[in-house]
Length: 116
Image (cartoon, rainbow, N blue to C red; front, side, top):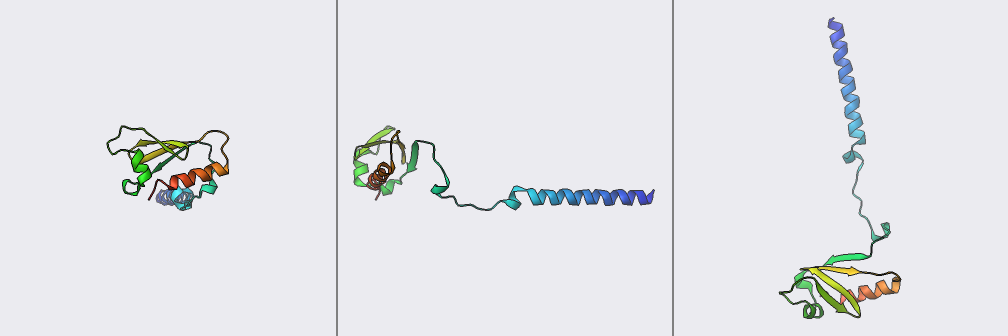
């Protein structure tokens, strides 16, 4: 009987060891690592872009179109590009079908004008 109890404890210990090893081997923490994604890693299917601009980085061009005590959303027009300040320091650009790389480049160049 005493031998059966020792054998039972050994079996439980072995089961615990295998279970613990399995959890350690296949846990998210054990196999995960930091990945720094690049924009090239994604195929973007959305047509809405949100971005933030700190209050102290606003250019004079942007300050003229966005009064301090504004009611949001504010429509902003820059180089025939229309977009919104959704709420304080948060901006929203919506693209439409038919845009190409040169349109995106033009948008980037225009948005550079609103940041100091």
